[in-house]
Length: 304
Image (cartoon, rainbow, N blue to C red; front, side, top):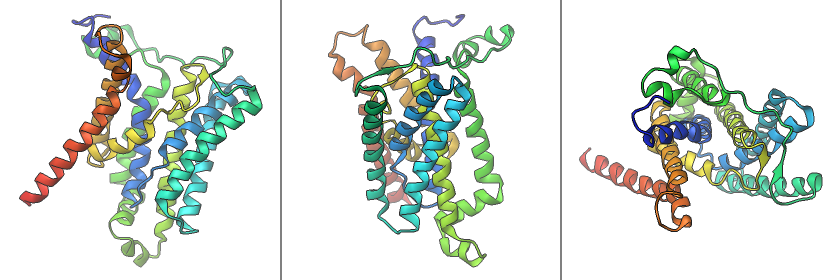
């Protein structure tokens, strides 16, 4: 790499990759948030996509097939969560927690039934995620070339999803009605639309993005690790609020969390502190960020 710092540039480069599942889950959760629903099922949706993506990729020998089927499974679970919440009128918090617990238990049980183990399952024959090739001239751009290039295709697909989401949310009739559902559902009813359809659409979109986030986690490892989501769905939920419920803000918040995890990975071999503390650093930053966000919201409301 041509960067000026042997430590900072690899740190940021890795952060761009690490932030991907946070960003995918958060941008999907943004749709449900704007539709007036707090989607706490993101963790379970990521875990579902992670398990089925690599299982189907191994079974079919197709990377794309595994990703698409993994996304489909995550969307089916999202559909179940949405149907129970919206049409059976179950409590959204209880249903969301139940979805997370179901995904956690179901993937472990199914892994044991299929592979006779409750531990790490390796898939050495699964094709690797391809790294997007770019012209050498772009790679030589100082700092920018080192940081932004050399990632796998899901990273770049994530950026495309964020751009498309910004257009859909703010520049299309669907986005207008989605936001209207969250702000004033009666307005949507007055134009002959059912607000639940937009809420369900938001939940299904979150299933799509979380499924892709899960595929990213397992396919880059060529292995499934129980509870591989490791709280990423909860951190993504925090990123939605820290990002002020906007795509651009979510990108910044996700990068901060990605940078924290990237730093914790580097710090394990540099600083003479307990490894458990270093590994907990991303979650400590999450809690600190929420505290600062609450203080900022209180300060802003007191001055209004």
